[in-house]
Length: 145
Image 1: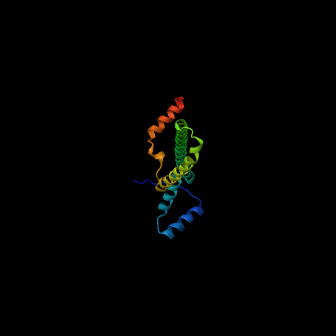
Image 2 (image 1 turned 90 degrees about the horizontal axis):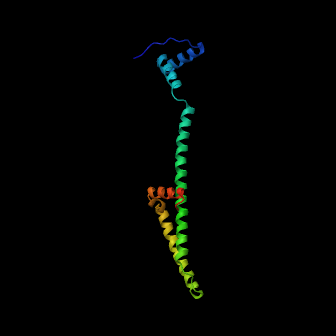
Image 3 (image 1 turned 120 degrees about the vertical axis):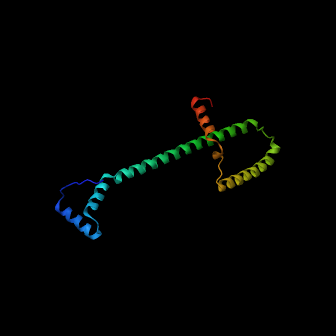
């Protein structure tokens, strides 16, 4: 359904509307209707603000994941070091050279395995279910860790 609207516009604007109407071969009412629709739609600033808001939300979620991953990584390393220091007996002086050679071999194997996993896109952190991470954070917050 359409309704009629009478309005007055400056003479130069009416002449610009007439020129555009003749050039594009469309009715003047279609030009005015498009202009009013454009005026009533969200402006570029609103669209930019919405885009910025979406981007900020995405960045916030990424920062939360990074913080979570860093916390899990730090806790994993701390637990490993504590466990290793607890169970590793001191070596006598004559066994240290052989242990250092074996340690270098093991470390090279570790670095090689790590490189392969990273190249394949595998991540230990992705293997840990989110509910376990959430439980870990809850325990940290209550001081039970």
